[in-house]
Length: 442
Image (tube, rainbow, N blue to C red; front, side, top):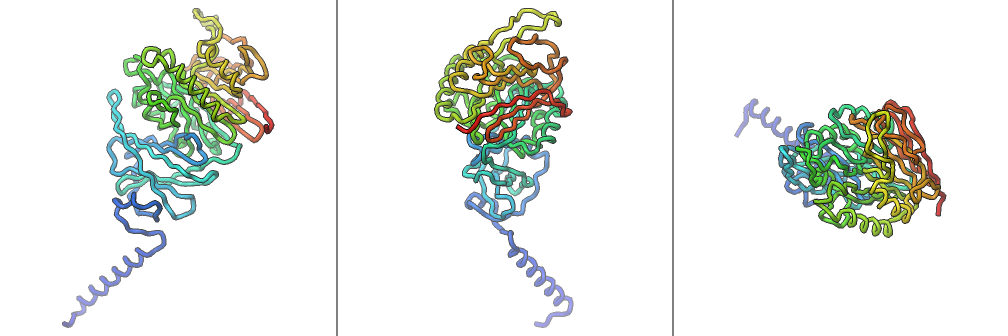
């Protein structure tokens, strides 16, 4: 059969199109596989995804693991269930991609419902730059950085209470800190992240601020008393906090994500749950169970340097007489009477606390008095818009008090082989205080 000129032209175009498609399929890095097969591969090449829009997922975060040199937890949220949520990651600059399936949990709290996704990356190489993206169905985010830890030197950001009525103040503290310290490897929040633990809008506002940082470096969070409040300001277990942060396990299912530890180089961090008075009826054994865990953890994980992070401060402050308020005498708080002897016993080097919304450097304390052989105690300050300017009288153990009336601050921890330094800054970069500890190799 003979073709006319028109039919011949169509055939030529068809053959050309097939040739282009065939060539495209064999370009380096291109693989065609149905998304259903993704979990059958351990490694694969790049898949062409539709880009996830900013409204489809929220609150992307890296979360601290017990050993951040070889593992990382990734979490995010959505307003809807996702089809086959997963994380893809690769060594930066390489083509081979690995896939980890993510869990999905629907969480209803108060009037809000969210879907929480969690993926655990294990077996990573220390000191390696990776990149990851979040995926579901045939969609994916852009690639984001993830770097594993290595060695004994690092920098960390430390943020005191960020609870707020307007989280723009929290943003005005956290973001300048991050912009000045983008070489920080992780950040710590000292508890009372939000004003009301059941208010999803506050959690979203808090995450909106930290997401540019949290998608790049892991966070280590601390539960505070405000995480225990429901929408009617009644005390409950910190349900939202326990769901939003998948932290290292402590061996107690009833206290999941509440107290934990992790190690960075030769520094062991112990993060305590200090909501004992709030939980006295709901969890009457919390403190004794935690003490038992603390002893076991320190016996198994003690390092050259050992740091405790706790929300409530171990010292009791009296009200400043100038405020006209009375009813509090300066002393050691109950938390201090119980825990400070344990810190002495196990050779803790540094105790970071919060709760009182003021920055105080108390120097080294042992047996409830100044002693260079005891831990350094730092009350970290305030990072939200709930401030108590001039409320507290100076404690006899205070060695430095931030200028009054007090505004927000953040801290930078810098660790080298033989030195651990803390510096407190105002949001504009003004240096308030420096504390340095030295310890030669043992």
